[in-house]
Image (tube, rainbow, N blue to C red; front, side, top):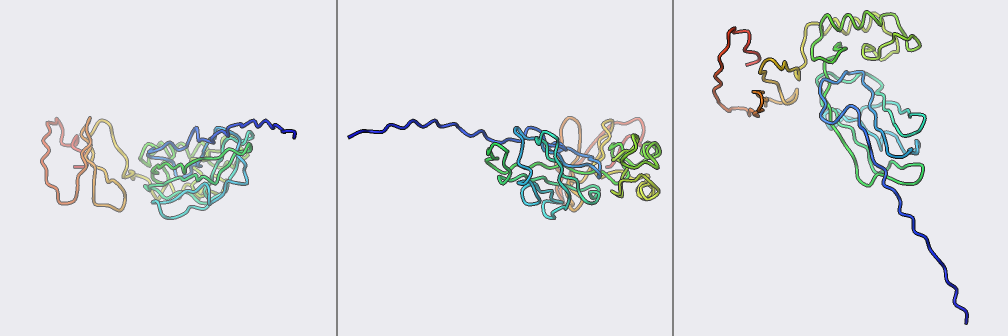
Length: 231
């Protein structure tokens, strides 16, 4: 009898990983017109990225609809929401194991990250809607996407045209501050989220979580009463 010998070569499959997420995890004061981006370690199979495998959730519950595009090398997926994001809101991005690469490698576990938005009209993402934002809009006013001075950060109406409608949005929020706005020269109390009575008292370098009904005393020496902010 003859014995046939067969040689098998086992090539380990590489894991598909996410190398960069944008906005970054736990980032704050993100512009409401910002697209969501995920960069992968390998070129991805674009047919595997959709609303079931790359999701954007508002307050961890509501699915945000949008369109998907890809970089030329297929290593970056871009989710552009159909409408501007809601201001002062927590968003979560989830990428599931359903995403695969062109070489067959896949994500081994769901990947997620969070970020919070600033107010509509806050073009420079400093937490305030003010004259600086008006100047940013003014420089792009009248532009569409084919113009070199088009600025997506002031395309509040998501219609690819910087016009009076975007100016109206800025005007509606003009003079307001995001609930996540902090001034590093002061010690503000800011809410943990728009729909909670909890707050965070920021006394540099420490942060203390303040719960409803909790009583405490803060003493500070200031030269001007205006230096006490948010208390």
